[in-house]
Image 1 (cartoon, rainbow, N blue to C red):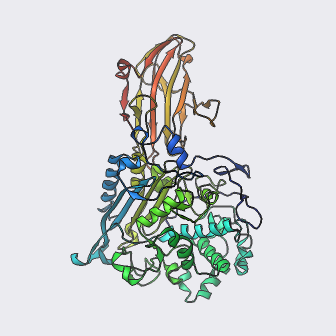
Image 2: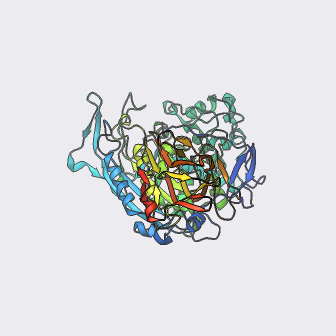
Image 3: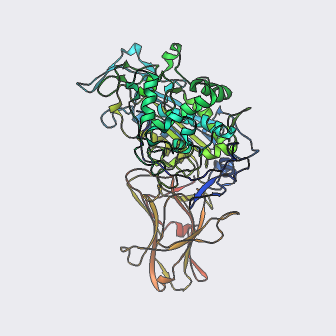
Length: 628
């Protein structure tokens, strides 16, 4: 079974397209949002626009090479190696990213999370980190009696290399999805058409109403998988699929399923008359120069391929021994290694080319594989009916469980059961690839996504946030399961027009982590202080947004907001104000920043953080002054 199955979901009733001609020819203004069951065209920040105009991101002095993202007519970079500074990233978090990943080569907590990995991180056209760690091949077998791995002799073990090729497992689903979106763009496949209109036998088991969109967004009602590999013939496997009864009414729930992408493969092969591996080569990998990406790698590649599992009953569905150079997934193996849900092998650099292509709006160098409108649909949530289960066409969106602090409403990616992951963040134009062999020697040694989250957090931290004013701003940090406070000294307010003003920047795990403004007259009983925020600049909300509970959480666009809080309720009292940043035990966002703090008492400024004397009276627990 492929894919790290977590909750996702949401549905969109209609997608703009011209009948018989695929996606609508008109430009969609940067994005599509579902509002009350209808489509609304709305601009969504894209990588290039954010990188150049967002004062909250970029390298020192604003010289970050962040590329152009998906803007029409903009420069679209190709990849080259370079320094963190050239990429507009900070070096220390990238160094820590490697150290964090290396920690999972040791017991974490009982066994290594992976035998080895290849890490790649970049921004714009610059790959600032490409690092192999650990072993591509370490174990010859798994001893279930002692729960230990049987190691190859040292001279037969193979170290990870930058060009090590991995079984991508469910990341393969992204390639199938891209091939489907190509056909939608060309008008040969309709997003809202039923699958049975292309494959009549598919209608069996009550599946006649399942649509192509529901396959792409995992809302078809299919259960997660069925053991197709137990049928010895292709006809028998297809009969199992045709007879499968949905576990839920199509469109009523999100349920991640390999069967969705297997079904999509069958549609593509029916429409094009070409097998999926040929489609992959001709439509994606050859045009992009991804020469280390394919189904069924040849035997000559084996010394450069990371081994996977000692596949034996009962933990595996098949008795195969050490799987090395062949697909790990049993169903994909049963389909001869070529399947819509699994089977693609690739290396980190090739996946970085794919990432750059999508962040460029579908083009890399002289090759275009998708239109900008089509790419935009990959980054647009079609599952708004199922909050927390955001999904574009094939791509998962806004999933902190493996994207960590890189998660935004537009961050797209996927994971693979073998230990692989890919994350793209258009808002910062960053990309992260973590390829590990975490089922080597056995799948039970790995649980959760801790290395994926840790590395994503570090890359998110490597994207600088410039202070709103001056050289530093107060930063909450990014620690989980913690509380950090930033407290102003006691101030006596005598005016009915007393107010707090500051600049505020926040990005937290929605609902789980929050930033709170609180007040106390005795230093112990802290009460919420309502405030308003306003995002400056053209095209943004002209009126201040109220926060009556005195708190913010989730996504704010990763830009500075102007905050004001009415303090007249504390007239005639000695008042202390504090910011409290609280996180839960799981995931975090990029954190919070506070800058340019002022308390005005009528016509007087009683506190100004830009005055050295006042700045020295701020009490910080967990917060630090940061230039980035």
